[in-house]
Length: 305
Image: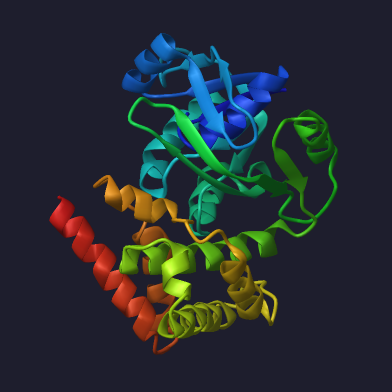
């Protein structure tokens, strides 16, 4: 299968790079500046799971109409609308889209653009960032990509994808309930990104405070209440599960949103916290922690601009 990775940043560059390292047919759709950088330096990954470097195959949108079997979308949510036209140009008629974005509302955009059948589910767990030289730095042992049919079925195409992903030097996991997995990840990333960005701290110092523990659990319960009102496919005890997980994380763990704020970069506040806040309003739910976090993030964006 021919694989197109939209973006060669901390997420797409890492997982696409691991597939290319294995020998799969991988091309990266990038912007002109990133293309020039990668042509000069190669795609370099410094990883807790082993460093590697490749000379990637690169493509700029519009320079050809080459078609691909699988398109892995690793953009930020605020880049997705612009990327959809590029994806449409390069997706084969029977091709499939594997999104790796945080959140859930991007699924509606992709399904509207390409149809129910062509979009499968996906998510990832990884702590990675681009450094000032364009090198992907991956700092923890976790480097997991989860994917699956949104119907839960083991279709022929998903079996082919499974075979391609096997034996890659990253943890590619085929899920039988990717919808639930995506909602659980959404809950986790919204809590982690919101709390660390609000406090300006890694998770360790926050949870070391008695008040921090209360805020973590209360915020998880706020998000869970919203999702239950939305009839999201989440477990009844997911807040407790995610609370335990947050308390087991490395104390130096930062969210990608927090790292982006430290670099004065755009953030995904509307896609993550903003979307849930709108749903809370629609259901007349009181969400004081979410309100506070969203206010902080919106003010950051206004001041940044």
